[in-house]
Every structure is written in structure tokens, then in C-alpha cells.
Image (cartoon, rainbow, N blue to C red):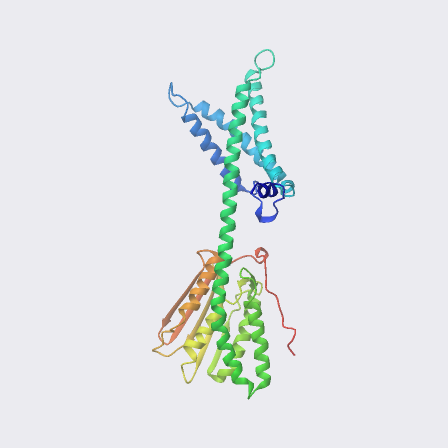
Length: 366
């Protein structure tokens, strides 16, 4: 156990595992300033009261502490890249040295300012230096502990999110696979060329479905995959399936999670068109409005149809969008007379911000 602890301290912390956050960010600086001011306020309130609240003492103590906090944040921000390449123990020691060193330096500077009107150099108050140094040491330890716990909490949330997305995708695959294979089987004997094309479309869809769970593609890629899925169903349903697209308002490079529209199309066909002898039509409308992407899938359906079984796919899409885009993302479904509507909405995300993207064009197509 002891050897493992010293081994941890002797290794650098790279990437997202580094315990010290980016202190150059406005959020981190604001947090440090607020925490420091609260500490000063508690310290002033703890002083013996003789003639009311000492506002001058609060102002002087705030000025003293805030200078230390802001300069410490600036120095640690500049040293963060260097510390990430050094052993963990050295990085922690550097944090202590910066904060405690600045606290002692400002203590001496404050004494010099107070004594500058007097003759001679100010005396060195060892007790005051020791007290300020210990306070800086304790506060640095508390902040480092807070940063470490925050980092572990973030890593835990990321791991839980990945597990959740993987679980959701594993629920989608069997349902999608069985329906697609049934479509292909019906083509093998009568239209082998179409069956071959359907297999290639299915391989594209599953290649997308097996990508990493946090992958974001583009609308152009999602549109291509959905067209491939509809080709598979068109071979099976023939003229019973009629699809119209009104998606000119969506740019091709619009970020979109993989296979979020396809399950809505699958529900429209499975629960709306398939039960009807005459089939029906599916309409897809997409637009960007008020900072959100809106995609609406509507389909004709029998009057008595309630789209039974569609809730699982909708819940999966809703959970995936919420995990990737937050509470602003939503999925809605309702029936209005002879038509059933499904709508997904999520905040627009700039293309340059997403980390991974699925990009594939089948090399087997003729």
C-alpha cells in the first residue's frame, strides 16, 4: 500500500486526470474570489467586537487575501502545463510553494507599507509570518482536496454516462436487427441484386450503430443512413411506403447523434404503415429554429392504432439526447386523428466542438 502511494506520487498526471483545474477560466477565478472573501468575512466576524463591525479591517483583510488569491491563480495557471508533465508529488509541492510563498511575501510587503512612514526597516514578526504561512498551508490543502474530489466526481459521472449510453444502444440493436433481416430475407429469392444492396445498407447502419456512444456525426451522415434504411423497407413494402422529405433548412454539417432519426422512421413504418393493407405515407420535416434543431416525423396510421411498442425507442432516444445535450433536449410523440407525430428537439452544437465523428462511405458499393 505504501509503495503504491509513493508510486502514484512519482508519476505525472496527464490529460483529464490532472487534479488542478484551469485557473485561467472565469468560473474558476470567480469561485476562488468568492471562497476567499467568505474566509475573510468569517475571520473578521470571529474577532472580538469592541465598537461595532470593523469595516476597515474587512477591507484591508480582503485586499490582502485577494491579492494572494489572484496572483496564486495566475502563477498556477501559467505553471499548469509544466506541472502536468512532472510527478504528482512535485506538482502538489509546487502548489503549496506558490501559495505559501506569496502569503509570506505579502505579509512582509504589508509590514513594509505600514512602517514606511517610520525611520528604519520594519521589524520581522516571526509569529505573524508563521501564522500566515500556516493559514495559507491549511487553505491550500482544503482547496486541493476540493479540486481532487471534484475531479473524481466528474470522472465518475463520465463513466456512468458512458455505461448508460452503451446500455441504451444495446437495447436498440436487437429490435433494429430483426426487422431489417426480415426485410432482406424476403428479397433473396426474388431480387438477389436488391438483397445485396440491402445488405450493404444494413452494414452501413450497423457500422454507425457500433461506433462509440459519445460520437457525434452530421446531419448529412444521418440522412444518408436513414435513406439506406428506407431503401431496405421500400424493397419489402413496395408502393405501400411513400416518403417525403422537407429538410432543406438543416445544414449538412449540423452536428447530430448517430441513429436518432432512424428509430422514429422505424416506428412510423412498423406501427403506422405495416398494419394497413394500403400502407401509407411518412413525412420528415427538419428545421433550425430559436437555437434548437427540430425534426418531426409524421405518418398515416389506422384510426384505432395507438403505436403500441413505440415507447421503448422513444425513451431510448430521449435518454440519449438528454445525456448528450442536457435537459433542453426532448422527444415528444402524439396522435392527431389519422396521423401520428414524433418530434425530437435538441440544442444546436457548433460543428467544431464535437470530439468524435462517424465518417464512412462504403467501399463495397458498385
